[in-house]
Length: 461
Image 1 (tube, rainbow, N blue to C red):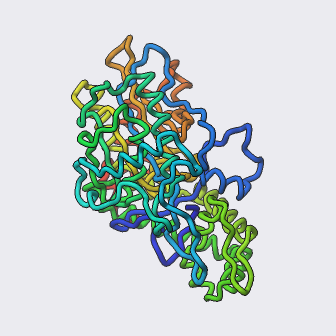
Image 2 (tube, helix red, strand yellow; image 1 turned 60 degrees about the vertical axis):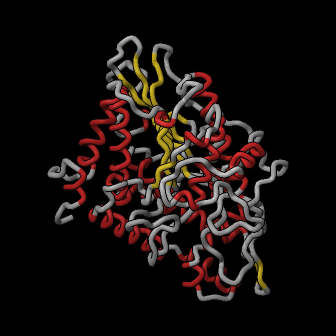
C-alpha cells in the first residue's frame, strides 16, 4: 500500500494499541535501472513486486572462514486484495482461489495447496487456529492474500532454502521444532504468507513441527507496547503529513475530480483511501473504475503516487517519523539481539526465526536502523539479519543485514563507519548490541533516558 495517513485515522494496515503508522517508500536503488527522477509508475511497479525471473540476492555471502549460525527473517505479507473500497464503484474482480496453471505460477504451488488443504496438525497459538491456511475465495475478500502473494513467498522461501539450507546447512535434515521460531500477527494474509515461505524453505514441511506464535501488535512489541512518547511522535508525524497535503493543490483537485466521478463528497472519497484500491487495479492490470460521470484514470493515480514520493522525502528530512520508529522498533530489535547473544554464547536457541508482518512493522525497523534510502516495503519484502561466527576466532561474532537481497549492513547507522577503521568484512555483533542497548536512545536526543521505559515516559517532550 502506498499510503499517506488521512488525518482522521491511524494506519490503514493495522492499528493495535495505537501502535502503527504508515511510512512512505524507497528501496536501495539499483544504479543500472533507477530512473533519474522518481517516476510514480516505476515506483508502483516495484511496489507490486510481480513475480518473474529469480532475483539476484546477496544473502549468505561471507568469507569462507565464517560460519552462519542463525538467521532472523522479517517479511511483509505478499500481494493482497485492498482493505478499502472506492465508494459507489464495483470492486475489482480478482480470484483468490489458487490455480496451479494460472499466472503467476510456481512449481510448488500445487503441492502447497494440497498440503494446506489437508488441514493442520500444527499447534498454533490462539487465535491463529481459526484462520484459513490458504486463500480460497472466487472473489477475494478484503485484505485477502492473492495467488500472486502466495507465489511471492514460495519464491522467497525457495531462494532462502537454496542459500541457507543447501549451501550453509543451517538446519539439519532431521530438524526439530525448537530450531524454528515463528511469529505472525492475527491476519490470514500474514499467517498464509509465513506458511508459503516455510513451504518453499523447509526440506520437508511437517505440520507436527510447525508452531506459530501470535503477535497482537503490528510492531511486534509483545509486552512492551505502552509507550506514550512514541504515540506523541506519531501524532506529530501525522500532523506533518496533513499539512503537506494541504499545500498540494494538484492533489486536492485530483481528489475533487475523482469524487465528482463517483459522486460522493471529496472528504468521503479521501477517507476511503482510494490509492489502496487503485494499487490493486494497477498491480493486477485491471482497468480503474468508471461511472456515468467518467473514469478514474492513470493521471489521477500518478498525482497521488507522486505526492506519496514527496511525502516520503519530507518525512526523512523532518525526522519526526524517526523518533516514532526508534521507539516503535526497539522491542523487536531488543528481542532479536537477545536471541543472537544467546546463540553466540552457545546456548540452545532457534537458528531460524521468521516474523510474518506488515509494512507498518518493517518501516519503523528500517528507519530505526538508519536505512534512510530503503524504499517503502513492497509486497513480500524481506529484511534479514544473519549472525556469523569466525571459525578462526570462535569467540568473535558478526552480523549482516539484507533488505530484499541487497546487503545494507554498511548503510546502517551502527555500522556505516566500521570499514574506515577496521579491515573486518562484516559488522561486529557488539556494534548492533550497543546500538540497541544505548545508541537508539542517544539518537532520540534524550541524554537522560538510557532505557526503553524512560524514553517512552520522558516528560516535557
